[in-house]
Image 1 (cartoon, rainbow, N blue to C red):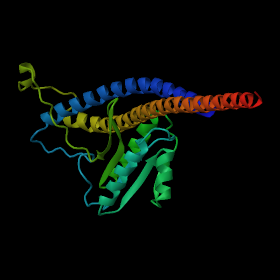
Image 2: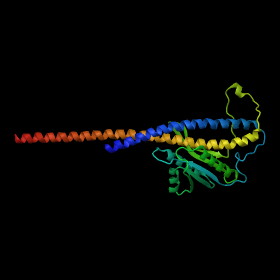
Image 3: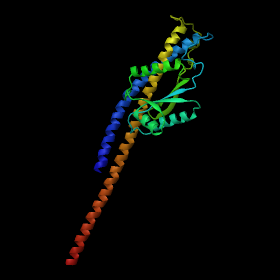
Image 4: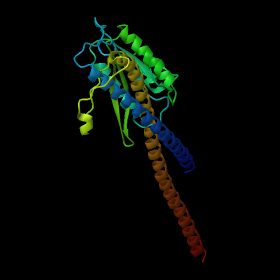
Length: 282
């Protein structure tokens, strides 16, 4: 009972820490998501203004000739005790790797993913400097590295496997294509004012603006993947520690009942022996 009580106190503390981190990371992810959507909306308007024009950007199409190789970045956690978080991401990554018919390079963030690929004898480059709260500067450096490799013709496509955060009760293992970027599609406008054909004036020209915005969009998208992965990890840990705390409480009550029964049985046995001894002497 003492051991279960100590474990329950530990899991309760971890639950409270995960809850606090989740709230902070969720706010950060929501703010970054708003920024990413705004950048995508601007790029959508630029793409619409260039409709019918030949605009070539190395980030929008696979290299020619094809490289015959792709890259997968897997975002996992550095620590465990977060339920099926890592298992879901790694399962989706493994299924994606098996579906590929051409060579695939694997890179992984997080100690859990590194251990998994090492155990399964899958060669993977590991990044260990991101930590529990990835910095935008570190993610931008990685995104810049990917854009340089892609434009140099090293890869035909670059994908990211991470846990997408939808709500506090739903997180989905997702594999998204980072490069080449798909031309941004215009959002559906409901307002009559927004459905009119509006003409914008750009300075500098839309093609030049689009070439500047696409790298920013890649960096923001990758940073959003990291943010959602961290939020999902904290949610999974919060839920897992709450379940462990509840299970510890139930086990503690069960052990207490068993202890009370054994104690009552011992008292009853002693009373019976005393009464029996008294009757014999009488």
